Picture 1 (cartoon, rainbow, N blue to C red):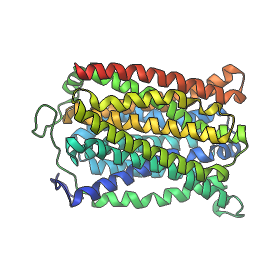
Picture 2 (picture 1 turned 180 degrees about the vertical axis):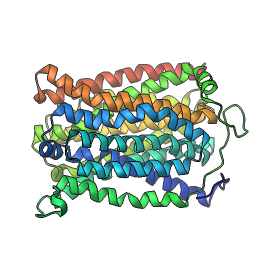
Picture 3 (picture 1 turned 90 degrees about the horizontal axis):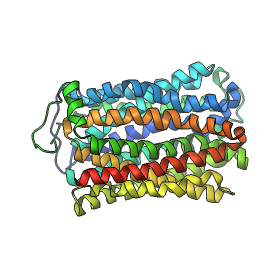
Length: 429
C-alpha cells in the first residue's frame, strides 16, 4: 500500500483490477456474515439454543456494534485512507468467524458474531466510497453493480460451500480438537478468507473525485457541519434510507429463517439444500444486481431527476409477493419465490447505493452510507430475525415460523414501496 492517494487511470490499468479486489472483499465479508445460516440448525442443536437465541445471534449480534460504530466508521471513510480501514475491518470478520467456530456458549457465539457484523457491515461504505472514486458518474451504477454481485456471490458461496463442507465433514470421525462438523466448517472458511484480505495489502488509495455541485475534490467537514448539511438533504435521504431498511428487513429475515423452514417443513439437511440454494442465491443475486445496475443507469439517462430510483421502486414492489415464499406448499415454489425476493432485493440495493453515490456530495457519502448502515443493520438485521421468532411465539409457537416470516416480509416490502415513492418525488423536486 502507498501512503498517498493516487489518481487511477480513466479506462484501463489498475482500475479494473482494483474493482475486482474490492468485489472479492465484499464477497468475503458476506461469506463471513452468512456462513452460520446454512449450519444454524446444527449449531442450535449442538449448543442447546432456542429460536429466540438464534434470532439474537443472527440479528442483534451482527447489528449492535455496527449501530454504535457505523457513523464513526463513515467519518473514517470520508477522512482517512479507506484501503487501510478496509484491511482492518476484514481482519475483524476473520477473527469473528474463528471465535464463532470455537464458541462454547451463547455469549461467546454472540461476541464472535459481533466481530463479524462490525467487519462485514463496516466495510460496505468504504468499498462503495472507493468504487465511486474508481468510476465515472455515467458508469456508477454498473460499478456499484459489481460490488453487489460480490455480495451475492458471497451469500451463494456461504450456502453452497458451507453446505458441502459440513456434509463432507459430518461422517469424519476424530476431527482435530474434537470439533463438530459445523465448527470445523467455520474454521476452514476463516482460513480461506485470508487470501482476499491479503490482496488488499497491495492496493493503492485512489484520489477522491467530484462532489455533486462542485467538480473539485472536497475535504470532509467536521461532524456537526456535515450532519447539518446532510439534514438539508433529508427530504431525499430519509425516505431512501427508510425504503432500503424496510426492504432489507424482509431479505434479512429470509436469509436467517429460510434454512429452518426447509429443515422443519420439508425435512432437508444442509447437504441436501446447500448446493442448489447456493446456486439459486448466487444467480438471483447476480441477476438482480445486473438488472439493477442497468436500470439505474438507464433511468438516470432517461430522467436525471430521480430516474436512477426507478429500479428501487420496482424492486420493492416485486418483494411483496415474493415474501410469501415461506408458505409455499413445496420446495420448487419455495425456491422460485425466494429467488424472486433475492432478485428484488439486489435491484433495490443497487438503486439506492447508486442514488447515494450520485445525488449525495462526495464529502458526505461516507457519513450518509454510515448512517444508513447503522440504522439499516440495527433495524433490518438486528430486529427483523427476532421479530419473526417473537411473532411465531405470539401465533402459537415455533411451528408457526413460516407464517410469521411471510407476514413480516410482506408488511416490510409494502412500506418500502411507499417510502421509495416519496424519495422519487423528492429527487424530482
